[in-house]
Image (cartoon, rainbow, N blue to C red; front, side):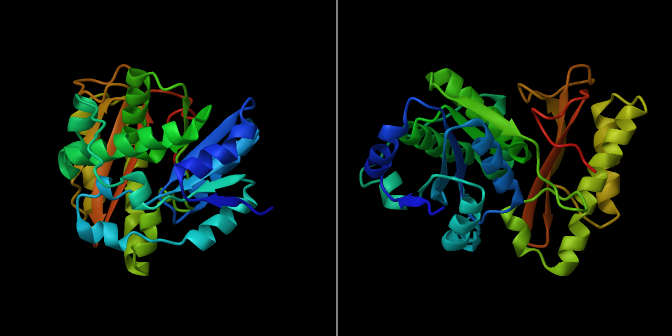
Length: 293
């Protein structure tokens, strides 16, 4: 099939008007599609009559200009891959369409879910940028369901809080983290790794697996489990920006794991910053994150 590409919110609404009444699924992306994105598109295809993909590299969620400039932009290839997954419509706006002259509104989600982890290291403006652009995209598409990957676990928590607080009528669907053959979480940033760096990065899922094994052996102390992860990372001389174990819903620190807990980390491999996570304390990880191989 050949997907229609629209560039403005006005054209998007015209295109979607005759399709309303049946379920619309929406997958927001910044492009550079990989198997993780495609798994979201396939899930949306199986559960909705219409599937919309957005491609927009959102400048307001990048703290470093160099990171924004380096982000891959591959729209033609992205559309071809998305068509194979069966999408119906591509929304690919310009920055000026999303943030026109005089734009002065920011959606800001407060509390531990934005102040910690990525918010602490990337700055509060990161999640302000995420919440603002996701709110704008959801209001533009007005989908029944929107699909996100669980690799960005904190982002999912933030988006769910924002949708609940603002009363946006959409179901936020988190799908399992998509992983490569060696367990590394798929990410558009992985393409920036050299062959040697890619081999080193495989220690990240190994460290998470080591923590899962320690948890299965009966260890419930978050500090001990975080040390297991750090020790594994040091085998490849990687120093993480953070390794934290927090409540899976509130992202608040916990003293001992009772309820499901999120083990999340961020680490730089060369110049590439990678994040990953697993859930500890539940058997079924489908709704939250993908289990490691």
